[in-house]
Amino acid sequence: MNKTIFYWLLAIIITLSAAVYQRTTGPTYPKKIDLTFADKQYKLKLLRSHSSTKPCLVSLNINDNRIEGKILYRRYPSSDDFSEVIMERNGKNLIAQLPNQAPAGKLEYRVLLNDVENNVEVLNSGPVVIRFKGALKAMYLPEC
Image 1 (tube, rainbow, N blue to C red):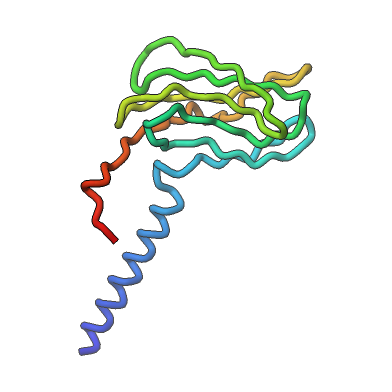
Image 2: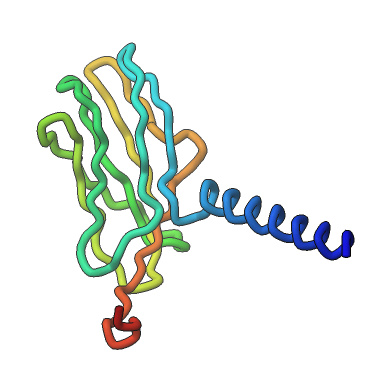
């Protein structure tokens, strides 16, 4: 009896630990970046998953008009040349759109930020890979 309870508790602890680990480190969660740029600290998130029904909007909350940015992207995996999209200022945000891809399509992208004096790449650990997912049709969803 005591062994059974012990094994059940152990199984629950392992399952919950795995769920928390997957939730915080899974490949579909945004890549979090702490960036010090122009003597200011920014907390940014770069998307790694997007619904393929429309282009992916990349928005960075950087409230400094001296900072400009661009995104370099290409299909993943490939050895294609990178395409470039200039980020536009929208209030406090720098925004750009990555082109829509078919379901299960992937792009790798990197964000480059610069001001008058510096050219700083946001992500030093390499490009971010974003996966485009398809929408699930309503006929496959259970009615509530």
